[in-house]
Length: 289
Ligand SMILES: [Zn+2]
Ligand SMILES: [Zn+2]
Image (cartoon, rainbow, N blue to C red; front, top):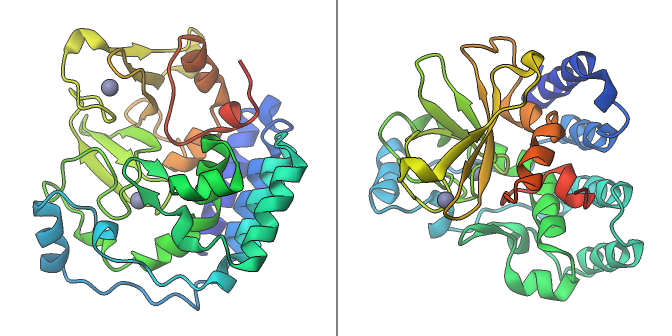
């Protein structure tokens, strides 16, 4: 079973646990199916050694800052198509999406234009050309890059061991974190939705602005006792938030991405309190308040 077949199974399990989300979250299932049928055959993984990776990390650079991954455009056709279908399903203007599809077909939009850069997903110039919202472009980036970047960094991922990286962006692709896991030993492990990596980060620090003032770091937990272990961790300084699951209380929780996509009620709690997230969820994309 490949990782994406497993994610699809975890998604099925999550919808069993939260059946009322089955309808509203159906577009995510289509993305997971596109990922599961995608083939990594055309990707040549980056073969940097542990020392080559660590030399970049010691300078505070994610690997992607120093090279451009070779992702053949044709390997992403189906993934981009699935991402555009998702955006249509959550209400993005069909004319805009037609423009994105045409830009992709003409070659004006290429994989490189969707890569993370300086704390955001996709370049500013691509966003201006496509006229997509930042959330729309961000989702297009996650949905279409995840399997190829996962395959591209597969040999470097094991080098992200304890202590090799302590910044808040992904050590491989540089994207902001998509979800937080509180691990069995009480540490915070951030997850990257764009390339599937994960790294340990301080629990005393905002992963978006670096703020360490305890009074500014807030935790919003749902009142329902059935939701024990799930929370929104937010920062009053930059108003950023990341959702978290405490795996000491939720031993049967799914992968970070599945838990993130499967908890839109927590995004609603965060949004209603005025917080934002850099990696968009269906709640931002559908414009729900
Ligand atoms: Zn990443
Ligand atoms: Zn902050």
